[in-house]
Each structure stands twice: as C-alpha cells, then as structure tokens.
Image: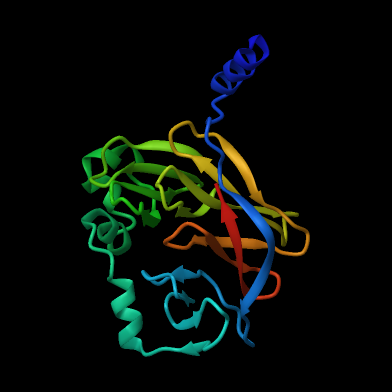
Length: 227
C-alpha cells in the first residue's frame, strides 16, 4: 500500500495523468499513394473517408477509390467548420490576435492551423514556433509547448496529438507523433519509427484510428490507436 501511494504521488508531482495517453497499436498500413505527394489527411464526419491535400483528393478507409474531387467539393469542405474564431483564424491569420481579446498577448504573430475539439469547446492552434490552446471564444489562452506541429484531437477532447520534426540543419530527417495532455501539458511518444517521417496526424471521429502523411514517401498511412 505504501508503495502504491508513493507511485501515485510521483505521478501527480510530475504532471503525468492517471489515464493512459493515446498509443499506437500494430503497424501503420498505406492507404493512398500517387505520383504526387499526398498530405494533410482530414477525416470525413462519418469516418469512412479521408480528404487529402486540402480536400483535393479523397480515399476510403479501406484504401479503395482514391480520386481527385471537384473545386466545389473542396470549397465546401474548407468552410464546413462554423466556429467563428476558427473561421477568423483561417481568414485573418495575421490580424486575429490583435482583434480577439483573449489572444492579444500574441499580437504580431501569425496564428494558423486551428483545430476545434470534438466537443466544440476548445481550439488548438499554432502561433510562431509554439502550440496553444484556448476556449472556443479565445479566452483562457495557454501555451502547450514549442516545435509542436499540426494538432489533432482525441475523441474525448482530453488530448491532442502533434508532429515533432527532426532535421540536420538542411533536411528533415525525422517525424514523430506525440500526444499532449491538455490539462497538465504532459507529453508521451505515440509513434516513432525510422521507417517513416510522420507528420499531420488526424484521429478518426470514433478515436480508434490515426492517419498521417509520410514525408519521405509522400504516402498516407493509417494505424490503430487506443487509450
């Protein structure tokens, strides 16, 4: 009993959550590859498809039916979010910080890559070299860390998963996926492999799968995850 209490105290002291952070299960599998690089996977609301390259391509989760889509479909997907602050960040990335009271400490910074939580109550975004989180109206701004790229939310809204880049000063040599507890800021490695340079994670609506782009091959991969 004494040992259990001591272990619990250490967990609380170092900001490590009592609930397991997301982790990868099994090996990634390729679902889309073409002659041109495929990037930035985004899940359809029903979790049956992925939209790629800012919505210009789509593919089913099985990997079948990879195809380019119309400009009209691309525009509809780009405007599907209705949160006013997310839309403002997208349309005015340089001005938004000075216009929203809760973000004024970031005035002068370019604010980009906003992602609304599944519950619609929080937004994760990048500004400068850092990742931030705030309420859906811009209040309660918090910094989660530096050099964290392109957030995606877990289905329960308790974690984000981000990319971390490694380079040799000239070329990108590493891409890892890390989960971040939004309550404590505690970080945990979700996926790291010398086989892939993993960026742009995207968690499925049911929270059971994660897609990412492989910078090295230009392909899109998908893998199972669990908490």
